[in-house]
Length: 212
Image (cartoon, rainbow, N blue to C red; front, side, top):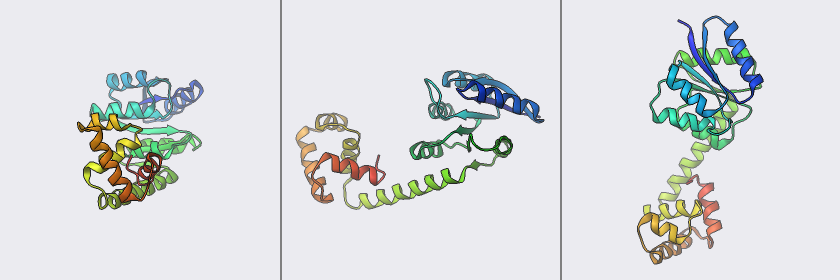
């Protein structure tokens, strides 16, 4: 049986090239070609393809948003991200969402075909630099979290994360169902423990340790 594909890219030339490439290759069947996230999501729901080749940056719902929705729906379709470049945060989220492949658009079409076959067979395919960045970031975040939990209480850690999300004291109090005065007391203790003296410094600390 051919490998059933849905291909998504917001650039018509790239989409057309991908369609022609896989149509000419034996063992593949293009079920749909899509130019935005909503169309892609509907196509996957309708056709239940074996593999989705998904552009990261598309209008409206981008590739990662599509991936999040598919994982929420527990869709069995395996996903390959196709991109010019992948930011560290995007690579990290893609890894957490269980994407099976990442291919850069600059790579030869034959490598994309190999990637599709490998992912379809249950394997994974990742561009080395992307994997290196993701692993490095995950390790740094893990080490930062381990270090911080030995310094701060769970409640203090919650407050640090909320500060790093730009919430003011009232917003933090509402989110945690505590008084603003209690938030101020916690912040005073946090500043003292971490040897810092401002919300900006606390935000930078949280980001450096991978807490947000």
